[in-house]
Amino acid sequence: MAGQRLGEFELIARYFAPLAAGAPGALGLRDDAAVIPVPPGEDLVVTTDAMLEGVHFLIKDGPARIARKLLRVNVSDLAAKGAKPVGYQLAIALPEHLANDEWLSAFCDGLAQDQKTFGIALYGGDTVRSPDRLMLNVTAFGSVPTGAMLRRDHGQAGDGLYVTGSIGDAALGLEVKLNHRLFSSAAMMFFDSRLHLPTPRLAFGQGLRGLASAAMDVSDGLVQDAGHVAVASGVRIVINAEAVPLSLATRQAVAEDRDLLIPVLTGGEDYELLFTAPPRAEAQIMALSRQAGLAVTRIGNLEPGTGVAVVDSSGQPIRLSQGGFQHFGGGLQ
Image (cartoon, rainbow, N blue to C red; front, side):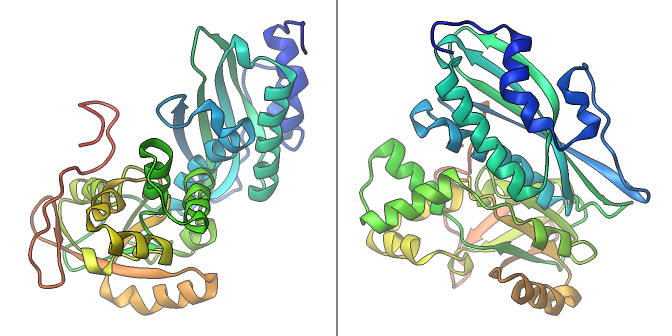
């Protein structure tokens, strides 16, 4: 495409229409709407996430990794709803300097790779020219049995608070990327992978239907996202900081610098599942954990009241200088 400017429709036909080949309802991206099929007895789950250059990614991250993270953070939202992915729509505001064959081909290759991973296809969207920065927006579609979608607002006092996987790895990836923190080369590669290629917990999320009372994924930070559940469910959440699962690399980093515990608990972008469940469901949750080959840890409790408290092993409150990422009101709070 060097030396040649493609119009909107030529660009769509060349780069994005092939991504819709597996979705008859996308109509070859030749219409201004699509048909999203939902099996009988199921609800359609819809979620939208946007990513903006300089806020969620840097251009130097590379087009394929940007594309794959874009899909994965949206599929993670479906996982947190207990949904099976169906497809997605993409809106892209593309600056002039990226409207070239090399960048667009690599970006679409990244999308195609993860479309195959998650069994989804492109159902349309919009393509516009941006005056400066790249902006990407995905609306993802999934399906769940009617009435079975996991929500944030059904947690109850007496429930346990659980999280999958490990927390804080992506936050330390940001420490390397933005603050030039140095760890071992192996740790930095691990943190970078966790930051740029999160793993949506789809199978586990679907297994939580009927077990979890509330659920969401950890995107803005463990403490802040627990706060979202607390507000929606009308409860107080107490998190035991010592129980929060850390990878070996993150555990070593925090042991060497205790101040790193704050970004670990508040930094976000883990895309693990944070959920609540009544005591009677604990044995089934742990059986699901073993079946899925995914670690699950109980990290706290729900009780009457409001807000989120983070405590140490003796039950004493831990003061945090920030709660998590916010787009408005000063960024990290």
